[in-house]
Amino acid sequence: MSEARGALLGPAEIRDLAGRLGVRPTKTLGQNFVHDGGTVRKIVRAADVRSGERVVEVGPGLGSLTLGLLEAGASVVAVEIDPVLAKQLPTTVAAHVPDVGDRLEVVGADALEVTALPGEPPTALVANLPYNVAVPVLLTFLERFDSLERVLVMVQAEVADRLAAPPGSRTYGVPSVKAAWYADARRAGTIGRSVFWPVPNVDSALVALDRREPPATTATREQVFAVVDAAFAQRRKMLRSALSGLAGSASVAAEVLEAADVDPQARGEVLDVAAFARVAEQLVLRGCLAERPARGAAPAERRTGRPGTVDA
Image (cartoon, rainbow, N blue to C red; front, side, top):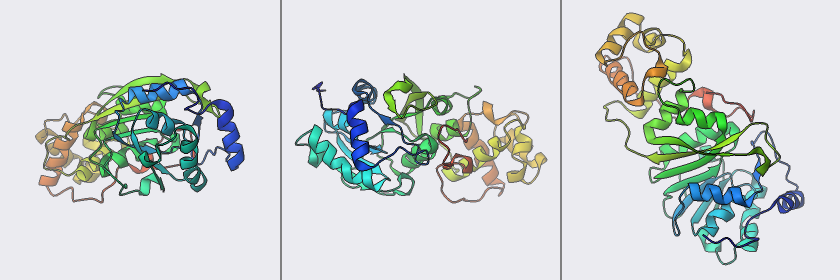
């Protein structure tokens, strides 16, 4: 990877560029721009970006990470919801990393509404995800783009803990299980607050996910996720009670759980994704669980417009 000075954006240039564009970071979009080149290169290294690889970046903002990905030799498709930022990105790239215009494509859209990407299918997702939509964006892209082999995202530290949490831990919940359907997740580093403008009021961390096959099951992803949502809707309830709504009664729920080799008195926080899949299978066999509309996240994980919060 080149370490050429001036290839990446610094603090003064970030502020100057934002000023010229009339851009003020908004809480609604959860915008915090990275202005430290060392941090950008740390993210790119942690993502193991390879020269020539097709990478999708969500929320490139002013282009700090985009420049780092291009500097590493990647081909980047950047998804940006802000039309001003989307229009400016190619100009910024041309000024900092000359002769790579053919390796950048910009999609001006809401990431949660993107169903197709131009060019070759991406094999990696690398992004500084807005805090208020990090989980739904991550799960949506894992669902819609099965070409993704690896993911490296910077998110709120609390979200990182939940995504990478193992069963039985205090932070294990809906994001943990749903991410585990697609991939093995792990914490991949911490990021200090001072490398952002504006400085966020929460800590950030890197999460790496490596794609793997979902559990072997006759239940669909939608059916398994419906069980996960129900199990954590009132997480302190025992599963026989938490799943009574899906099963029709607590007694039927207990029978389902026993058939799935799960203790009816257990709580959702101790089950791994394979166990949830077994429970879904048994509910389907009893006609309790029909096909449901596809969705990547539970309602509590949808955007709230409140950056710095964790909603799942």
